[in-house]
Length: 353
Image (cartoon, rainbow, N blue to C red):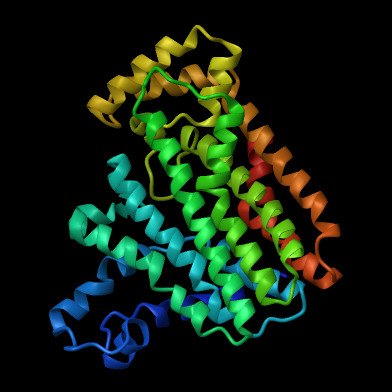
């Protein structure tokens, strides 16, 4: 199965590359923007996709577009799913560019945040383009009008939900002394992070021939997988860090991640101490002592390990529930294999050792 994933990921990479040419030419411009009174000059054309290509070229797991293709396969019809797969990856990339501006982040995927290279204006413009550009793929999808309308509705609904989740996250990290309840945090993660996994599974299932109820059920299952993925990232940020981001970035950004919530629930006296660390980290950046102090408080409360345990339990529950959601054993095998991409067995073993 691993070799099949590699093959599909290479094909997905080609689809993404074709969707965002470095030097857009007239046929591409007309495909996505319709008839234009005047074609943009060479400098404007080159600048159009440059910020997005900078981020996308740095890589990523690409598990969301892979999920879309595998969901279509699980319902017996892959036709057109590969061409549709960049829809969720481009939307995800756009959300990362915006997220870094909102959080004041300096690093993403091993390089400077996109707005620090290309300017806030160009970064915002390209991020918004990444939300809208791939919608054209739905218009071109080979299928009846009713199916294309369902794909449009599903994509738009999930993108609205993403922005609701982002609003919750922004409000929370502006307030150093506020810690949400665990159920509020999980709801926010469902909206902000889980929603694109949900969109990938739901849209892929619809493209593969699933009914609306079947697609919604698979989408909900993978929304929970997306939440688990976010919790894993929360914990990894506090331990070894994440690829392309500094260890403890979430402290600087004031993120009320699950380890923070669990620590404060177990030991309420930590609340004022963590609030002090958040404020100092926000003011002084990643190098201040309070970043490591906050991580030490969270580790000392056992909150990082507990968050990892909760994420893995959520993954296992989601995995166990997939059997009744797809009609073929081959389709189920492909979807189940995704779980090891999100939390590789070797990584689990090293953390448990």
